Image (spheres, rainbow, N blue to C red):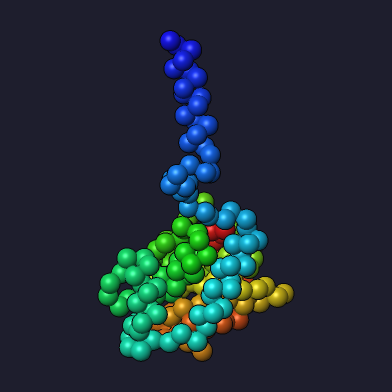
Length: 179
């Protein structure tokens, strides 16, 4: 009897594992890519497509509401961190996911130097903390070219658009690697 139960158990495993079982594959898995280079390209590509998105009101507008909703905000709010989080989410990465720019720079994610796809943090002395962030598009010598949300031509943290920015490495307080 024990041998029959054992054989039936094996038989069940074989049947469940087959692709041609009626009803098809009933076990599904979320597919996340952990290939750093693929993720790097995806995040940058998504951010590039957002360049030119503008607010239609202070910290508001259809796309800005999408960025903020991704991090759980229903009302208008500063959105640079939400933009960065949204880009990572669109690339299939579950983290980071925050609307608070300092939250993008935990000690466990800090890097010495910036690489494409990483995040930059800009320190604001009046706040006493990181107050703005962006996604590194490329590094060229001492310049970091980034794509940032909620900025403007002057590089403000209270701008009105997604823009490409060039910043000197000395102006970057922190780099974080979520890839």
